[in-house]
Structure formats: C-alpha cells, structure tokens
Amino acid sequence: MQYELRYRVIEAKRNTYQNIIDRLGDQPASRYLEGTLDVQPRENFHYRPTWAPGRELYDPRFTALRLTDSYSFTDPRQYYYTPYVTQRSALHDEFGKTLAYLQDRELLARLPETWHTMLTSVVVPLRHYESAAQLVSVAGARFADGTSIEQCCTFAAFDRIGNAQMLSRMGIELDSGHGGVLDAAKQNWLDAEHLQPLRRLAEEIMVTSDWAEGLLAVDLVDSLIYPLLYQGLDEAALLGGAGAYSLLAQHFTAWFTDQRKWIDALTRTWAEDPANGEDNRTTLARIAQTWQPRARGASAALASAIDSHEPGVHATEVLADIAGPGWAQPAGGAA
Amino acid sequence: MSSTLRKVGIDIQESEDNRALIDAIRADNPDLTIRHLPGLVKLQAAGQIVINRQTVEEKLGREWDTGEFQLAIVSYAGNFSEWDDDRILVKWEH
Image (cartoon, rainbow over all chains, first blue to last red; front, side, top):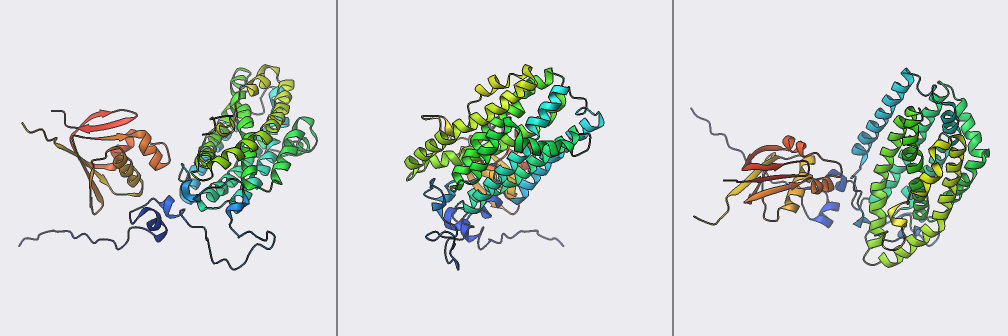
C-alpha cells in the first residue's frame, strides 16, 4: 500500500487588514505597517475639544508643518511596540552592564576630582532637561496628526525618561550609591548660572503651542548637547583618566544616533512634501532661525562651565565645530 | 548555443523578517518571478539575482548583515559568485 502525499494550498481570503489594503493593495505587509497606517481615527468624533474650538480632536492644524498625507512619513526604524521594547531593553541592559563594571572597580568614585565636579554640576543636572524634552515629545504624541508620527513621538518620550534614568544612575554611582549628587543636580538646575540659559530655553520650548516647533527646538538643543557632552568629551575623558565617563557616554551617543534617524526622515518628508513643501521649508527655516541661536547660547554656557572645571577639554572649541542638525542648515542643507 | 539565460533561483522561508528581504530582492531585481508555496517563497530570475545590504536595511528598518541571509534561505540554484559585506550575487558562472 502506498500513500501519495500531496499538499493543497488554501488561498487566504485576504492577506492583510483593510487599512493596508486601502493603501497598498491586498498583499502581506509588515507588522509595523499593519499597526500604523491609518490607525488614528479621522471621523465620527463624539466630542470636540472644548479647549480648542474650531479644531478636531486630531487635527493637522495643530502645527504649521503640514503633510499632504500624514502617512507619507513612516518610521525608518519601523518601531512598533515589540521592536521598540526589544531595542531599548538591549540599550539599557548594555548600560547596566557598563555601570556594573564601573561599580565593581569603583571607577566612578576614582574619577579625577575635576571630572567628578564637572559631571555632577554639568552632566547629571541634564536629567531635568530630559524631563522637559519628555513633555515636549508627549505633546507631539498627543497633537501630531497620523499614527506614524505620533508613535515616534511616544517612543521618543519614553526614551527621554530612559535617558534621565541613565543620568540618574550615573549620578547615584558618582555618589557611591547615595542620592546626594542628584539633590545637588536639582539645586544646580535651579540656581547654577551655567544651567540657567538651558533651563529657560527648555521651559520656553515646553510652552510652545506648536508641537512640531517644540520638538524641533528640542532637536536643535539635542544636536549640540549630545555631540558635545557625550562625544566631544570622549577623547579628553580617555586621555584625562576619566575613561569611566567615556564608557557611559557611548550609550547616550547610541541613543542619539537612533533618534536622529526618525527626526531626519520626518524633516525631509516635511521639506519635500509635494503640496506643502514650500511652506514647510519656510517654517523649518523660521524655526531654525528662532531657536538655533538660543540653543547655541545655552550649550555655550555649558561648554564654558566644562572648560572652567577641566580646561583640557576645550569644550568651547568642540562646540564651535558642531554643525547642528541637517534640516537646520541654511539653503539646500535641509533637503 | 541559445542566448537565453539560465535561471537562477533562491528559496526563502516565509516569515515576517524575510518578507522585507523578499521586498528588497524584488526592488533590486525587476525581472523576478515569485512563487508562494506553503511556508516557502521561490524566487527566480534569468541570469542573476542580486541582494543589496542597503536595500534590505531600508526595507527592514534596521542594520542587516549579509551573513543573516544564511538564516533565510532554504535552497538555491546557481552559484554565489559574490558574497561580501554589501552585496550578494547569485548567478551561473559556467
């Protein structure tokens, strides 16, 4: 007796969800697209925002930067919940491992005095800046039109909490497991002269009503502070006996590289939009013009504070070489 | 001697990640024929099939090592005439 093995292909009635079929046709799509395209409701809202008459709950008019189709932007990292959480848990695991290594060898406690003072008075207080950036990202998460943008903002907001946490853990370790450095950081954030321009700037960005403008203003600050503090100090830290700082700083640089991917893609989409590109480019230029000098001023104050503690770093010169984000470069640099 | 090119083929296991890979291969090889079998996708093209790391990374949204291609393929017909960090090229060389 012989059996003949055969298989039958049962065609699926549909390969994907309707939101994908409407845009891309009936073909298998990635989880990212399935959970992103046209997910945000567009019509049949029960309630209107009483606090913003003339606006819908989700409304593209919450920002001056418009897209003909909100979903012409998609996250180049394709983050939805699972990949985002996997990526970030890996980042924080790595950070934890680095910190454990430093802890075992008490490397942070053994930092040169000048580096210790510099980190406690300049770097650790930036956890409060991260907190401001978190609020700005949350505003984007609420007011952005289209799930693809909104979801990037949501993840960015959580990232900011994560970054603040990394800074806090660094601070606790700098104080050999106590919270003294964190208390001092708070006082510094409130009182220290070198942090006031940044604090003022952060607070003004927080009350900017256009969510995209706020987000981009934060990006302008990020684009100076991250390369300055976490990359620019690297060389000097390694040569100046503060290798421990370099080990920690790499994780912030890794995060910033990731953050750049979606911000750059989004600004490019805005600038190249077929119908609104012209207006968007004008708006982007205006935002850069408004906030770039202030971002420079705030980071210059940080740089000179670093130089006063540790002149070998030449932070002011390092800062002068940092160009800022691509979208804020004049003429053609934005596209 | 006929001038028709012999077909090369790659069979790829069907999965979420590999779908992006197949998209990338489709983008870089316009003359590709794709057949779906249960759990398997058969790709065929005359002459050669090229896989570019850059395209795969764009579709996949993350960094992709050409070595990961090993995990995706079930079978292939042709020679791997090139396999470096940026590109994989399958073609008949004789």
